[in-house]
Image (cartoon, rainbow, N blue to C red):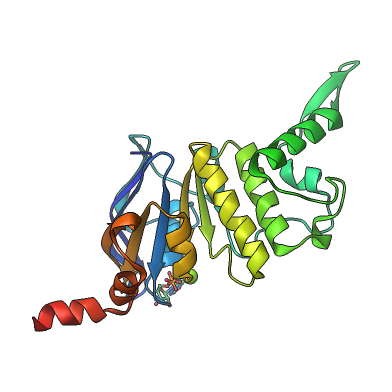
Length: 250
Ligand SMILES: Nc1ncnc2c1ncn2[C@@H]1O[C@H](COP(=O)(O)OP(=O)(O)O)[C@@H](O)[C@H]1O
Ligand SMILES: [Mg+2]
């Protein structure tokens, strides 16, 4: 297993936001994470990405126990999280965003200079692999569409050598054509053997790209289904609790 969480508990004062959650992702798998508002999805990914420390439970990455004290430590272990707000710098170019904090330098007369040529070449290669089209890698990110920005954020994660890419509602607020692009980026990641955790309210998107679906309700991960062996109606029933009620009644 590439990533595994066992018995994760996270409390906020008297509220138990995560109640002994087990969650695992395999290599090259797209795992969808679904659940109603307040189910605990964002809290779970914040625990994966080092933004929250769990009160109980263990996290393993490639078979080794890890404890992240910051998002930086999670990044260093190969977990990249792309939040809705993205955290790209609008008034910087595509190249500069992808290499933010990771600039390639080469020495000249003993002084390190930015190796812009290598950075530009690597940027072009990353965007090509994901099939991200931008007008120019020298354009400011703020001039780009939501789909292009998602592509740039994913390219940045790949440049940081991420193996697990967590995306929180990447298709929310995107036009249809842009949604198609983002779904194709997710498929491209899987083809590269990367693992993806996808939080989405859009059940159609979930069924199009995921291999498995984890359903959360009231801070618990209530079930994991193989996407090919379930259907949207069943998943919606599990999200809302309709299935549980029916099972209890029968
Ligand atoms: N920082 C926080 N402080 C207090 N309560 C929080 C905090 N973050 C989330 N919660 C609570 O934890 C529960 C789960 O929230 P969240 O993980 O955001 O759910 P989801 O992303 O599935 O909508 C909710 O009841 C929410 O109000
Ligand atoms: Mg959320």
